[in-house]
Figure 1 (spheres, one colour):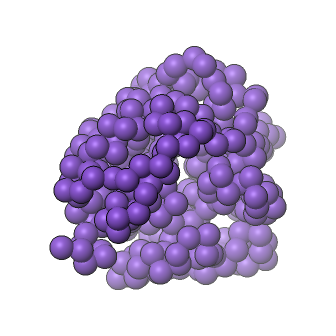
Figure 2 (spheres, rainbow, N blue to C red; figure 1 turned 90 degrees about the vertical axis):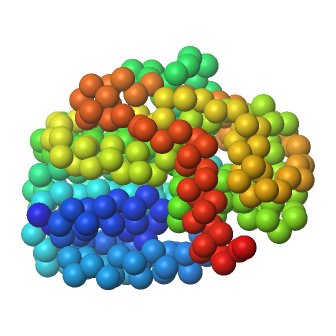
Length: 318
């Protein structure tokens, strides 16, 4: 079976592709390897994927419709996992058109081709950001998500609406996955765990927003990958699932664990909450558990230790 993974050089796309390849699937990776963060990390991920004979990679942009169409013509793609997107809440405040291109035009291109080439399943990345300032905890897929507070979140909500339309009009099976703060080895450098680790090891101050009064449902990458694979294997006419750890962790406890595994104290610069940020995320995963059998098993201490071990090895830090 051939599975197209967009964003294969990205954090989640890399881990998913590697697991699929190890399980014997043929993976067609598609990624523009842009410079939103250091491309060398993306190249290092690709180097590991290219060791597999059953991996084929296309370096191109989702907005290049003809290039993307050629991939569908060249391969008998049975399923699509669309993970490529312009990420980041804060970046969307200053670079809105990057989201319009990748998250809206790019999404429409790939779902349209999935429809034309009659793929068996279309699974895509949504985000916990769609919940906005939802005051009801934990966040449920039954909650109203009509009030996003960042452009990034608005584009992810738009993806869910486009998917619903394609499912309704063309009977294309679609499944949206709302990820909750994914972390782990080979993680994104713009996210808290990577940023904090990098700055603490180099003796620089870390910025902590809302004066530390933040809580996040941190979800380890292996648990997320298991959830994605379950979604790929479950054909649904139209579904939305939360993929989170079903625990809301205090940000300061998160920082203390990083300090513990690094053996070094953080210099903290406390700041007000930033526009577009939410003070707490917490996933209700009952629907994912019931339908997908999704059950995260990695606690935050174990996950952070694994990341720190990878970070030290990757950057050759004693």
